[in-house]
Length: 266
Image 1 (cartoon, rainbow, N blue to C red):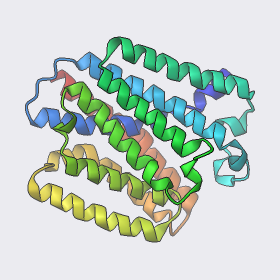
Image 2 (image 1 turned 90 degrees about the vertical axis):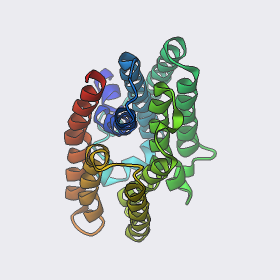
Image 3 (image 1 turned 45 degrees about the horizontal axis):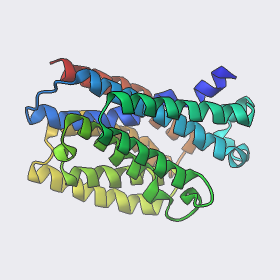
């Protein structure tokens, strides 16, 4: 049971949080901001990652019935091994409570508020009676919003919410929605949004609000991983999705962690 519960938090998916923290840290690095709280940054990264582990577990719990009928989701923890609902809920509530207890007692209130917004957004997205996941508004409250909040979480720890320019927040929002649409198999909408995201990126690079090193370090790996995900819309969806998963949730994760370690140490 414990093994199944731990599997449900999808630890490799922490790459999304690590990626957004790295993006924020690159702005601190290139603006010459001295990071006097490296341990707090690491703590915040761990707390957000654990929080999202609990929220992924909540997502799988609320989607259990529909996932049972989806052949592509048979590898999810609660489908492979049944766990009583009371233990799943106890696990989720305990993790979330522990994260907020540590955050409130050791980090800034702004950071805690942003984590609370993450929970609120996921509740609106996942749980009835609202459950935006089943509506046309789903993309707006999914990965895009979550990416913005992850960036903001690191920024408030650095002491400046807008150390990352607003245009970059918008870019990550649209790019993340595009990824969500590709994952959901909506090629036309994903292509249109990808075009818009490309224009925003060109603007950001042209105005100097992101340099080429930041693009290569914090954004390019995700773009590379997005290529097979986009191809999955047209051919061998299962295989292409697996490649995208390995590139982003495993290969890129290690790369991001190495980059974060470098910024915090040097």
